[in-house]
Structure formats: C-alpha cells, structure tokens
Length: 128
Image (cartoon, rainbow, N blue to C red):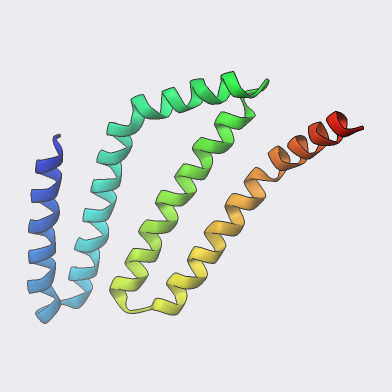
C-alpha cells in the first residue's frame, strides 16, 4: 500500500470518526484505535527493509547482536507508547498520556541499561 492510500484511509477514518462522535462516541474511539493500528501495521511492513539495515549496522558496531536487538525493541516501545498516548489524548485524558510517555521513557532506559553498563566498563578499561 502506498503512502497516499494510507493518507486517504486515515482522512476517511477521521471524517467518519468526527461524524460518529456526535451520535456514538464509543464507536468513534474504536474507529480511531482501529485506524491507528492499521497505519501502524502498514508502517511496520514498510519499515522492514530499514529495520534489517539497522540491525546490520548495529551488528557491525557492536561485538554482539544485543545492540541491534535493543535498538529494535526501543523502536517498538516508541511506536506503541506513541499510539497509546495519542489515543489517550483523543479521549481527553492528557494526564494519563503524560504518564504513559514517562513510562515509555523509563522502559527504554531499563532496556538500554545493559548497553550503558558495557559502554562504561569499556571506557574504564581504556582509562585504566
């Protein structure tokens, strides 16, 4: 599917969601979530070649595959967290969206902690 098709699909879903919001707000929310998930699946499909290149670069840069794995997991955390935050903002729950963003950032830091530790150990080896 091309980008213009995804844009057309998203605009149609947004217009339909706006109409549904007046009469059935719960269906409007479901349509918005379904559209977001659909666009996310399209994005993952389109990004597969890029993700494999990122994994190749990470494998070259680091001695182990952990770097590429951490990078890809972090990217997934970003996409899922952003989708959840946008959905919360659509509902009008800005406070929950802000806490979700904080939780996503903390999850990424926890995921990358072993890599930071390894980097620090290598720096200490070089200095000492």
